Length: 201
Image (tube, rainbow, N blue to C red):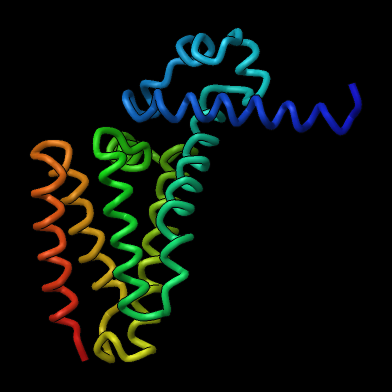
């Protein structure tokens, strides 16, 4: 086998493992991720899985990173095609709403927050905080752009508005799984529209 083929095959196997781990974690969370079930699902031995990640924690960290990339590709990649301002900010929230519609019965990122928010600092809690901080910074950036183009009132605390938008979307995550997506989605957008109206120039 040529050296150019081996890394490609290794990367493909790693992605296969992560894809299957993602589906398992949607149901059972990161802490419920079983190496045995994962190995069985991808047709490998446990040692074969460990050969790609080294430890269960390394697998969990890699899965968090992979889930973050999925989320950003799903939400931000289409949204940034819109012009800066409220139109882009609304596009971010619309794509985020669609992500919740698809994942309301199991979102790895939200599950990770619930699993690790009350734990002592460690690699997994640190990575969850980094992921959440990065996403909130994206929201703050979009709000600041909306302020710069005049869509949002000058002097608005971008961090506060981003926090309020995040809180509303978190309620959608919560209510969609318990009470149904459609009703929760309607109330979410009523709240978002009211927020934007309160911050108009």
